[in-house]
Each structure stands twice: as structure tokens, then as C-alpha cells.
Image (cartoon, rainbow, N blue to C red; front, side):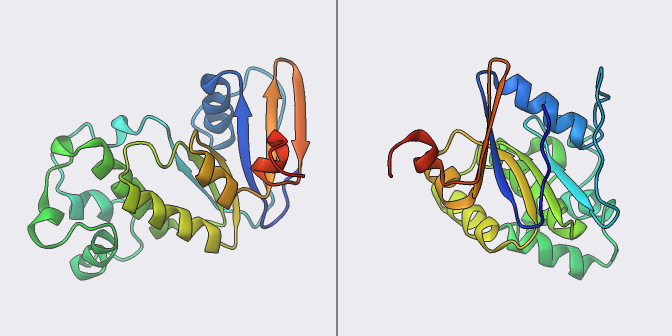
Length: 191
């Protein structure tokens, strides 16, 4: 497979196997080494990765959410960190919850807070709406529509893909299909 990304591309990756896309994203984010081939990021790119399985980020359980987020924050002050957690609906005592008691949706919201702190200009999102309620999905959707950087993502949510993606890369067997189009146009649902 070979493709080039441009600033502002919002690319949904589709494949017969979710594992294929997850593996690609793990390689591109540096979480896994490729068996073969190469990839190169531009010198001005900064990346942030949202994994499909984020459980390893919450295993220790020794941290409350404020101290968990502090590990990746340029500003260690509690008021700053609580501001980011508050944007993800962790207010008051909820910001002091231990990481090992979080629900799937709460973990997703924590990971999104961590990504916002990174100020990355390339986001790699593997199933960002999994475990979220409709209100949270809508908020993520709206944020990604406004986001000015580059996004590589995978999702099974038709509406989410349709409203965020401006490009579709599909891995169908050994064939790569790469089109600048809406998801509905890609599927042949609109002409």
C-alpha cells in the first residue's frame, strides 16, 4: 500500500478486517514495528494516537484522573488539568476517580483529554466513538469537523464517517482504493 497525506485530509480507513486497520494505525503511531516497508512523517507533524484498545493506559489504578493526566501535560497545575477533565464531564470529585474503576466511555473521554493536551496536528483515531453515548459522539463529531489538522480514523458509525471524512481509503483484499469523496459517494448512495 502506498499513499500520501496532505494537511487537512480527514481519511477514513475501511477494510475487510478491523485488525488490518488497527495494525496499520499501530505502525503509523510507532506502537508497533512493521514487518516490511517504510513510512515517513513530515518534519513539522506531531501525532496523537487513540487506540482501539486503551486498557493498558489505565491498568495501574494507582492514579486519580488528575494525576493520570498530569503525566502528559505541559502544565502540571491541578486547575489546568481539571479544566481539561471538565471539558470531558469529569467535574468536582469525579476528577479524583481512580483509573482502574472507569467505564469504557470514561476511558474514551480521558484519552480524548490526553489528546487535546498534545496539540497534535495529526490525529490517528481507531474507533473513537466506541463506548460513547449519543451526546458524546455528537461532541466528538463536531470537534473533528472543526479540527484543522489531518485525521486518520476508523469507525463503524455511518453518520460519523459521512460528516468527518473528506477522503476514503479502502483495503479490499489486496486492492487499495483511495478517493477524495464523501462516504455516501464512495458507497454509491449519492451521485
